[in-house]
Amino acid sequence: MTGKSKIHRLADQAFFMGPTTLFFAMAILIPFAYGFYLTLTSITSPVSPVEFAGFANYAKAFQDQQFWDSMWLTLKYVGGTIAFVNAIGFALAFLVTSGMRGQNFFRTAFFTPNLIGGLMLGYIWQFIFVQSLPSVGEKLGIEALRLGWLGDEALSFWALVIVTIWKSAGYMMIIFIAGLIAVPRDVIEASTIDGAGPWRRLTRITLPLMVPAFVVTVFLTLKDAFMVYDLNYSLTEGGPYGSTKMVSMHVVQKAFVETNYGLGQAEAMLLFVIVAVVTGLQVYFSKKWEVQA
Image (tube, rainbow, N blue to C red; front, top):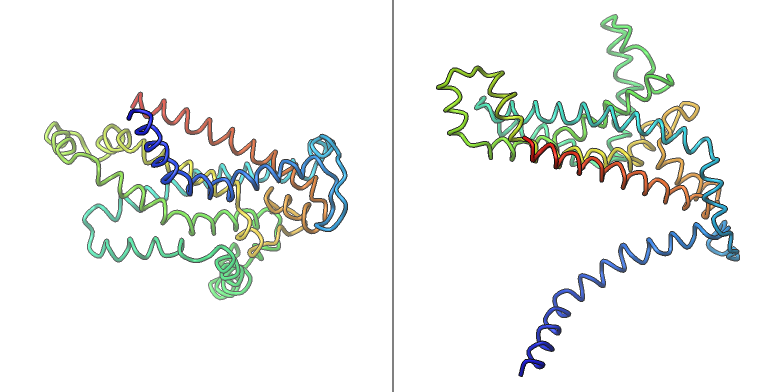
């Protein structure tokens, strides 16, 4: 009887876990394993003969200066977007939970840019930076707006950061709204009775209780910033002169434009390891901060 019940339990587990495990393997594990296999070959096209190359592609990846230049640029982009997206997202959440009139409308308005696909968003803002802003700047006499942002090596990077903030801040706002709503009202009321002003309530009570929300938003911002491709491609195509080519675009071009699948996949694996380490450290230290708070 006992043996039969164990068989039934195993059958139930297989029935419920089997499809999920199968789909996870087909969508994640098998492609990952095949991708690692490609890093050990010198394949240049889907129909070319496969030749084993060992770890030569990893050695070439470490020596690829363009890869590390694009990685450094991506790290600067990650730093800029994390700071601004989360700060503005929290400010918007604080604003639309303050009891202001029409706050439901503003919640929807701030979140809407996140619903636009990255490619479409890039083309929309490309028109704004190339056509609209210079016209407005010329009419108003504002030199900063008259500049061709996407044609300048420094300004094009900040144009990409601005569009990313505009797209992502509304999504982070929703997460922060959930965190603000979860802050106990009785704690806020007690601190008000004790004489704590708005700034003291924000820094001493609200922000410490919002740490779990910041853990999530920083993680999501990190992931999105490291993997940015569609917005990067449609807004600047990595230009001018490769000054905005993020690491994901470099990897795609190495594999599919230069048809060097082995090296491109090796650089993708290096990117995966770097992202995994950075996000792992972020979650680890954020959790420690959460416990201390």
